[in-house]
Image (cartoon, rainbow, N blue to C red; front, side, top):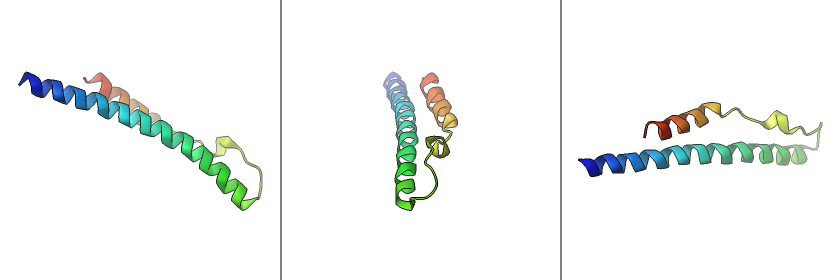
Length: 69
């Protein structure tokens, strides 16, 4: 029973780390994708703030998954 608790704890830690890591990768990727789309369209002006997405909920979810451990 104690091993089950340890295994679930480790899985929970990895899940939290994965959620936060994927959120950060997606956040950076979308900004780069916006720049590529701007260059392909060649219209208007590029502003990185136009392509920022709010992933606060994902960060909180990852934090709580880590915290519940």
